[in-house]
Image (cartoon, rainbow, N blue to C red; front, side, top):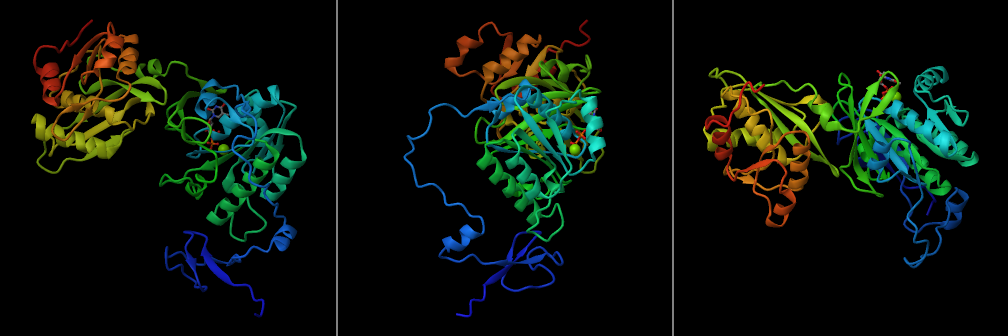
Length: 468
Ligand code: TYD
Ligand code: MG
């Protein structure tokens, strides 16, 4: 053997592996993205690896070893944030906070840093995007001028990690992972190779030092965190911060959590003084609901462990002979298309040549099939130009045959609706074992078919318009 190291070429853009260098990646078509990498030897050379900084893992241990205590958690000072994390930030965990630029990720993490600095210990806020002055201005606005909050304008991941290891920090924020670069990778900051390498550096330091690290990641226009979809498997917790920047409401959602439930959400409002927790999202989501307008139906959604009422709005245009356009915001457009098809085929409501707009008011996003019935009633109400009663809420999944199917958390949904005065609840029949719990929760109108729901509500005199 000559001792020549065997190499391969990895595309920085798509991750495909080539055996020789070419200018254009055959897999994704990008130019000049292939970088040379050594193919790791099959038999690890422990001595050489140790020289390169590799630490031998401790020998295998029985699973019964170690403490029975749950991992220590750090409070963020924001109850909504803690709930989404599963009860606070776990020591030594690596989090990813993703979201559109300008949505408020830096604001959120600065507020969390403020609380940790006040209550637990020093915080290292690594900012690769904003100057010291910019970050300080933000901190001042957020009343976060804490002596234990340290700003660090460093973009080299290894240097930032070194500081984390050296100092006595209780928490660290990397704002953002795309602005960091690793000395070992030659590609530009923000590229997949860089993002991956920097994230692994922070993963190592979090695990070794026990300091929880939160990395902020921007989402690109097509909805993936730039590069970072590829980070999701690497980190312990992935939180998405969502909402439309023109609305003040923001929703924090856990999509992956090794230490707690997923699909939990926290609701915030962006104000002049930063993010404020919204304790009663239902009231906020329904605040501007128009009275007596057709096409509006209240839907009790279940977000994580908590039901919230949202308003589903629909507007159906006049038939115009051509194929109708569908515009959907805040709902799964595939689900809405299915619901419209069922409405047309099973309830005889002509939709093919009408433009239909369906929207969830308040900039929230609903991803449950349980919203089908509310969507169908909102569209039917708009088509027929008949408002549904003001005190009506609806939930239920629609099947292709036009049947209304049961959904989870039915009683919780009814209870939340009743709490806000929506005492007519159009929904599928409750399972037998839940009926008792639902007693006294408003006036449920159980339906098993979509046609029943529509006829009942829009044709047979149940419509109470202009109620004062
Ligand atoms: P920012 O946290 O910088 O967003 P991101 O880090 O996700 O890019 O915040 C973006 C917006 O929030 C910005 O347009 C200004 C607004 N904002 C407030 O309304 N109130 C505040 O107290 C702060 C700090 C920001
Ligand atoms: Mg920012």
